[in-house]
Image 1 (cartoon, rainbow over the protein chains, first blue to last red):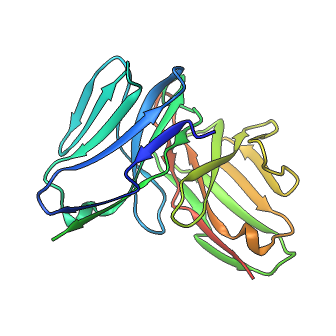
Image 2: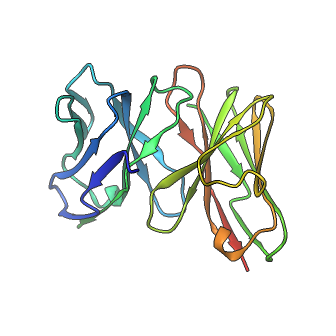
Length: 114
Length: 114
C-alpha cells in the first residue's frame, strides 16, 4: 500500500525557472511532512518540513504548500539552478519529527538545464 | 547539526558470505535508528527499526534472520546481511535523530554481492 504518492516521476526545467513537485497522502494521522534531497550515491538530506497547522513554509528558494483538506502538499523551488539537479522525496510520519518512521514518496528526478 | 555516519560506504562480497554495516550517531545519542534499503531509481523502503537494548522491529516481508540488527549502544547500530545473495545487492541507508529533531540520514552503503 503506497501511502504517499509523488508526481511527476521526472522533471526538466530551465535555469531560473520554478520546479514544482506534488505529493498526496492517505493517512490522516500523518502530522509531519518533510522533503529530502538526494544526490547520486549519497543519503537523503533534509530540505524543509511542514506540520499541518500551517499552509505554507518558506526557506530561501524552497517553499512547501500544504492543503490539509485535500491531503496534498507540494515543493516549489524558485529560481532553479543546475546544482538543484537531484532526486527529491516527499515523506510523511506520525507523532512528529523525532524518532518516527518515515513513509517516502516514489521520488522525482529533477534536472535543471543551464 | 546532527551527523549520522555509515561504514563502509561500499562493499563487495561473494554469495553466501555475511556483511556487517555500521551506523553511528556522531554527536548525539539515539535510542532508535532506522534502516532503509533503496534499489536503483527507486524510493527508500523501511526495513526495520533498531531499538537500543531491545529487539529490532522488522517491517512486513523483511526476513529478520537474514538481516540481523544489533543496537548495542546509544550511538551504534549494526546491520548484518547474512548468507548474502545477488538479489541483496542494494543501497542500505540508516537514519537517526536527536530528541525533538528531524531524522538525519547516513551516506549509505552500496552492497554488491557477486
